[in-house]
Image (tube, rainbow, N blue to C red; front, side):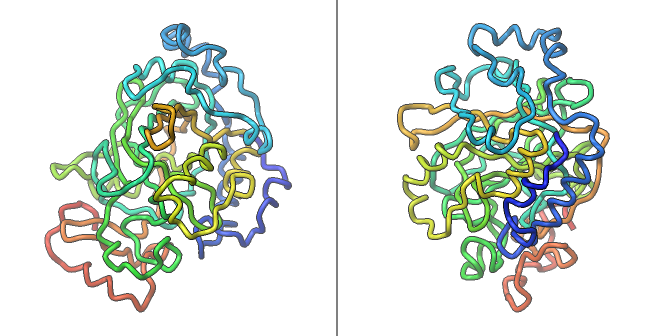
Length: 366
């Protein structure tokens, strides 16, 4: 990634928020500091090694022009002007992973310390995270590559989470969340959150929904990677691993696709202000530092409600391992706010914390 230009930082005031009520200037400062120490910032240097491994050859017949094989550093305007619609390639959720990711050198090493205020520990290891939510079906493929060796990173735990169609994150009761403090039961929900272990190609696949939007942030989803974690019998990760991570990042979507989704129900019921990609400070920072954090995608049929297939490869520094702060955790008896978190999951006068009883926990998180 490139060193941030001043224009990129100035897209939004430093007091702007990553989530409503959250000061984003700290995240941007962490981002710049991390990237300034990074030796490599994208996967373009991996092309020859991926080819030598036979990965690229498996894709030549189907993935023409290799859109991202020679991707250069780009600024926000270039990212926004690039269409990531790859429907013509004919990819579906059943397309072999080696084909989908064979020549994808698109995504840069994305910054750490950007988990945002709504990370919850104790979530389930599972592929399907939809539960009872309604929206545009999204099958999401993510591939993790070692930024230094260009090898796929297998056997790490990749976690995703996003808000629902009306801008609400599960597991959180907070004034800044999409439904505010009106739904105290939201502390016990787990929708659109899940974890999976990467396979031999460094790939996981999730069945989720296209994220909704909320004030001050463009449509996005969160990605987090745990290294050296252990899955427990209850299909959660051990408490010693839940908040230790190798990578945290965010993925974005083409504005054209966002607009198409926002015209469908229940996204039309979202009353929050839609922030466009061009006005999102996190996306601007990613682009100015050399990344294209926008997923490639394909329509599964002619209409958006029929579903989408999206994919992204991204590089990580496997030597990194640091602790992040969760705003809460999920247990057998429901969700619990984290009192010592740097993020505020519940307002001080909220009574929803009654769920944090001392009963035996399904999750290993404290």
